[in-house]
Length: 285
Ligand code: AMP
Ligand code: MN
Ligand code: MN
Ligand code: MN
Image 1 (tube, rainbow, N blue to C red):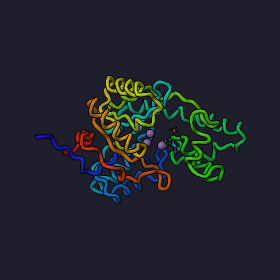
Image 2 (cartoon, helix red, strand yellow):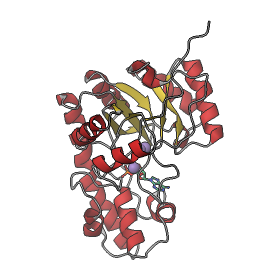
Image 3 (cartoon, protein in one colour):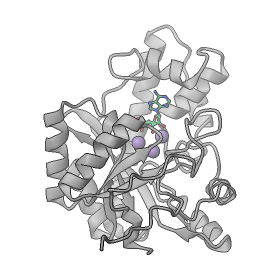
Image 4 (cartoon, rainbow, N blue to C red):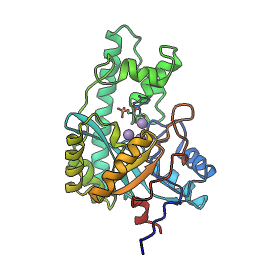
C-alpha cells in the first residue's frame, strides 16, 4: 500500500515579520496565520532570529505547531539565492555568527543604495528607509521601496523594484551575501533542515538549477520549496517533479510580507501536489 503523507495539513513555512521586512509584528503575523486556519507554521525572517521567541510563544498560546525558522541570503554563481532553515536551534552560536555577519553587510549596502539613488537625482532616502525598518539591525530593499511609495516617488512596490532596485537598475547595489556552504552548514549545525527557497525565481538555466540543487544536496540540503507565493502553478509542477527526482522533501509557504503587497495571504497558497513528500512530515504525522 502506498505510504500516506499529511498533505491536508495547512502548513505555512515561509513568512516575514517586522524583525525583517514584513509589516506585521511576529505576534500579529502568527495571529493572522491562526485566523487563516494555519496549523503548522514557521516565521522565516531574513538573516535574523530576533522575532522567533515572540512568534513561538504566540503560536504555543494558540495551540499551533511552531517550527523555528530563518531565511538566509546567499550568493551563488553571481545570483542571490535564499535558503530557509527550519526547525533550527535559535540559540546556536554558529547560526548567530553567520547571521550577524550578513546583517553587518546590509548596513554598508544600504548606504551605497542611497548614494546610487541620489546620483540618479532622487532625494537621500537612507534615513527614511531606516524609519521603515522596525529592526534597526536589518535593513533591506523592501524598506527603501516602502519609503519611495510613501513619498509618492513610485506607485507601487512592484514599480519601485522594476524601476530602481533590481539588477541593472539605478538603485541596485551588487552584494556578496553568505556562501551556500556557510548557510547550509549553519542550518545543519543547529539541527535544522535546509530548504532551497522559491527556486523558480533564480535567473538560472536548467543546467544552472541542476548544479545549484546538486551542490545544495551535497552540502546537506534536504528540501525545496514547491508551492510558494512566488511560484506560478507551472513553476510548482516543475519543482514538484524535481523534488521527487532529486529525493528532496517539499515545502509550502506563502512568503507573506504585508497585506496589499503579497500575492497570497498567510496559509492561502495552494496545497502541495500529492506526489511530494512534505517537509513537515519530519515533525508531525
Ligand atoms: P533584500 O534582501 O534587501 O535584497 O530584499 C529582498 C526582498 O525584497 C525580498 O525578500 C522581497 O521581500 C522584496 N522583493 C524583491 N523583489 C520584489 C518585487 N519585484 N516586488 C516586491 N518586493 C520584492
Ligand atoms: Mn523579503
Ligand atoms: Mn526570499
Ligand atoms: Mn521570504
